[in-house]
Length: 169
Image 1: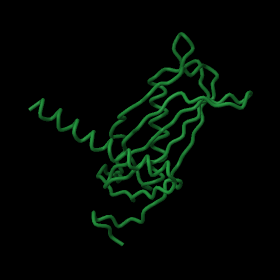
Image 2: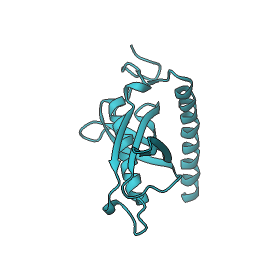
Image 3: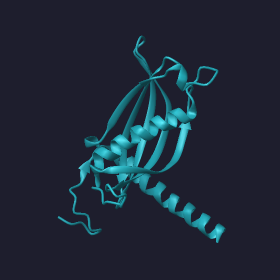
Image 4: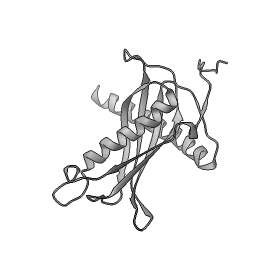
């Protein structure tokens, strides 16, 4: 079945590609104050986001952008960091992935939200050529909200790219 934009791939539900990874924060991941380095957290977010993008597209993926990241609370040496990623929306060859980061206190059985980010990945073949990706089927109210929000963020990204292009030219 081919959709109006030429897709030949069956759409996939959000839950089929949701991913989770865990990492213990070690001293070599931290600054002199014992806090996880922001760049190290960004690296882990990129990996977690790629997991969901790989699963959704069933393809190699490359990071196109990290549009937004919020560092909400420090992550300390010894903390158990949990990163959860989920596809928000797929376009022709690109996908917006949301990543939320939590610190789990395994002794007190509590979690604390410490960071969130939006990333765009592009599906590619082994030669780096763009590949089409399946559409997303949002099922829950939360998935539907994230799907709509991703469309708005994409339009804003396009407007910002055009603004930069006209400023340079």
